[in-house]
Length: 143
Image (tube, rainbow, N blue to C red; front, side, top):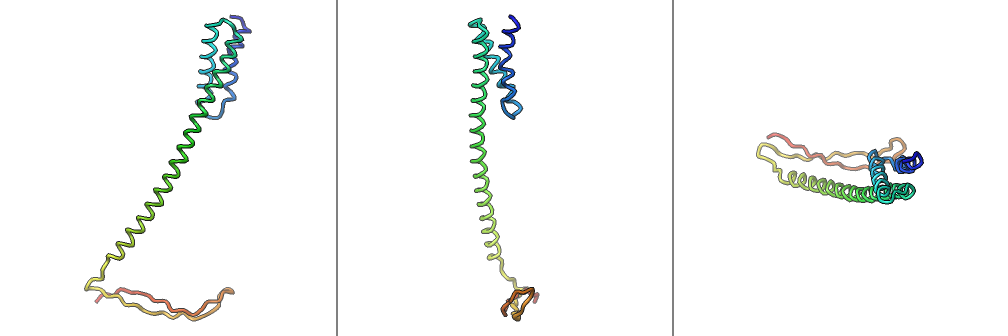
């Protein structure tokens, strides 16, 4: 094999340097290119056809990996949305359980609840006007 033929067979390896950011992609692209180029050279003994097949092998490998990656991105988005939905449902049911437990608590014979009204007068603070209002404060007391 001449040096010219060898350089044409190394063309797929050179093309894989631009094959993306994923660490495995250049290796798979190189394998696809060298494999396709080697098979084409063994069949035809023509280095130009082998170089073309090697370049085609790189492109086919790259396209296949992009298709796999796009499928992964779609699945990732789907699982992210599912996770958000599950988190929202869990929060909802957590609130429902908390409300149910608060409603189920009963005042025992040992305690009583007294509600104290607190009058808050009208006023102004930092340029904000407040209206007079009554706030009710429940307090549980021991008997």
